[in-house]
Length: 301
Image (cartoon, rainbow, N blue to C red; front, side, top):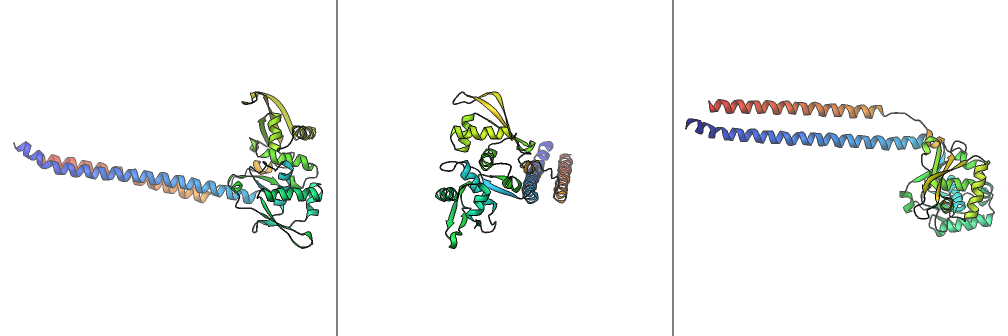
């Protein structure tokens, strides 16, 4: 009888110990969760800062949004757009580059340039503000949904190169968006010739002429593969582009290893602090359990 009565008296103590254990357990879970959140947040900040620093340390380049070469816009209009972007004011998203300058850069006739600019305006990629003495201002549509789809970069060296004819340069601009493994200095596309012409949004015969010139200048090599197009059943080729030869490799091969030492150090310190706190909680939990068991044993005696 005495034992049963004493045992009943230990119930509040055991219940109290269980509540303490539960609180400490939940607290430990919260600590681990906070630690993981801090870790993920720090990694995201490092990645964002790496991207910003990389863009700031890259050579001068033009940025062209993905998905532009479709509808009325073929590879040559895409190329003209890239030249316009080269002269863009980053603050106003506009340029007043002259038609004569664009003609000198592209070797296109002025009527052709005007036609291409009108198509870009019709497609809502630029707005043409007529000026005096035929000096127009071209305002880029920075609110276009294309700006959320990423962009390709093209060095000023590549854009200014006189060794690469305008049509071939426009084709390379269009192809780069589809290239894989660009970090190796040699971008690759696995595709059929018909698909390659579709990327340029031009006729197959036009594409074949451009392909011939790219091969003759060693800017591209083509190898047969075993892969087949799922729709047509045609065998795909592997098109390898020499980004080094055309002045584009520098954008992808930069081995900038400036690590964010201070940020990484703070992250490590925070993780160590949380680990230490978890250890203390484990110890505190163990001590509480020991005290509860000891108290319950004494009361039973």
